[in-house]
Length: 169
Image (cartoon, rainbow, N blue to C red):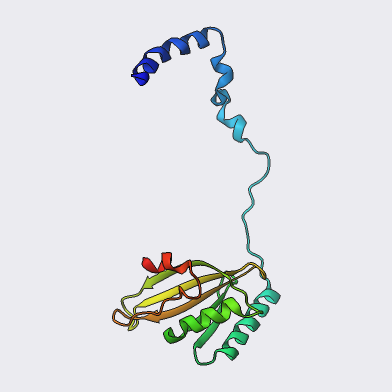
């Protein structure tokens, strides 16, 4: 009932406001679009700077992880975006995650994302990707492992409780 009354009175109220010139003050859309978004600065593209010292530092840390977990770490590499990527054996997921979370030199306490990539042409067609964040060192790391359709993966919920949301998918 109230909505019917409001609909009936709305045109009357708008007409009264227009007659007194109040409605033009209330609407910010009266400014031309060109005035609101005009810019005198030239547009510059964002270019990532190559930081070879940072890449070397990340590679040293990746090698340190590989030395401490030689049974599980298979490959350490730096991506084009300058992030550390560690490829591990599927049996070492929980051990590697616990090491990266609890070790003093790592402290990757936040799991940012967990996803799977399906590559049907591979023998182990599913690649599981864990993205971790260390707030203390302001660093990200990507941990990758693999599996097939039959072999189940061990859950990392005992290490990262928030991973249960990602693992459900």
